[in-house]
Image 1 (cartoon, helix red, strand yellow):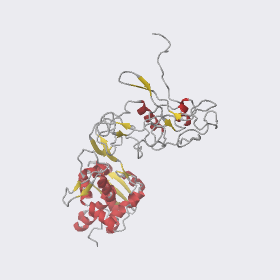
Image 2 (cartoon, one colour):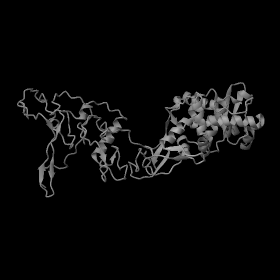
Image 3 (spheres, rainbow, N blue to C red):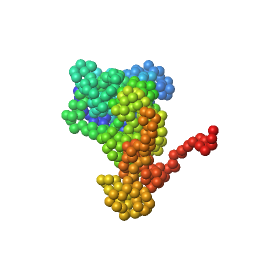
Image 4 (cartoon, helix red, strand yellow):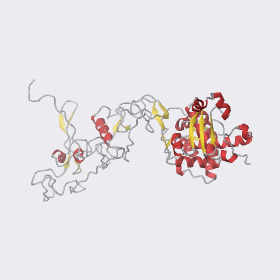
Length: 466
């Protein structure tokens, strides 16, 4: 008879159960596990047993030897019933059910031929061994050692000493940068895996033990590496997800965040920037081809950055209304650009921009002068020609800049910028180009088959004298 706990097999069994049940997100859904193994066990409350049998709650405590729960082997059916005390907290109950699952998957009832594993029935030493193994299974089912370690690493938390409070934040990470909230390892585990404070503390106490067991024995954690976390940092005021590195909420500008599971929380799309800190792809039309110094998308004219109105060096997410660094309004807040981006991202899911803007216009890559007039297809130009000699179209697709005004109210024309032949808007100033104004280029909405945005125009006829 083995009296000493085996801490390897419970870890292996827990990982197998997670994989077989198709768990893809923490906190672990115990209902999904019960559904997968419905032919092996059922889960019932003490209350249901009391209603069926007429027993009192105290009778249940005496029968099972526990106020939390127990598992009963149904003789002759090869099936089990897990009973739990529904009066306990949700998080404590989750661990109780996982613990009783451990007894089932580790074969404890079959090993000792007992329908109910109680201290009085099998002896204290043996009972303690079975309990330790079931608890090892439970903590590695609800909060596997591998995933706890990764969670702590992402928050810069390492084991600094052997003391109880030895798990401390020792470095800044992408997630914790500019995060002013004080947090601890146990709090992260409790919130991320939806376990009780006691279970989170036990998880931290045995973390190194379980990690060493995984590394010293052929225990493969790769089968569960795909499981993601549902818990993250949320603004405690408006409930929006905090983007890594931000000290203020992009939505409301506050700077109070809390780590929790929030199924009703909202977040911005995962849109990227290129090495030149430009939105890539463009959040409105999906264009990904920009010059290094472009400030505007050459296809739709949308700005390629969303700077803070207080400090232009603070560049924000395209949907952001407030600056991540100081909480001041962004350039897009309450602007037409913000509305266009919202409308576009409502239509296209994350990264689902199918548009590729191909151009058939041939041009000199050194001068951007076309080799064939895009309007009349004339190919005969003199070496220094600026306009087509047949239809008069400029051979370079310049923008049509507006006026600029000096301190005395005098207006002057701006210098035009040279653009690629297929540019609808200027990358430098965002104004329309000559070829676009002459309707030689379709709008991105026309290419996608979308109706053009309505232009309200002037409310009154300008010819009517008032």
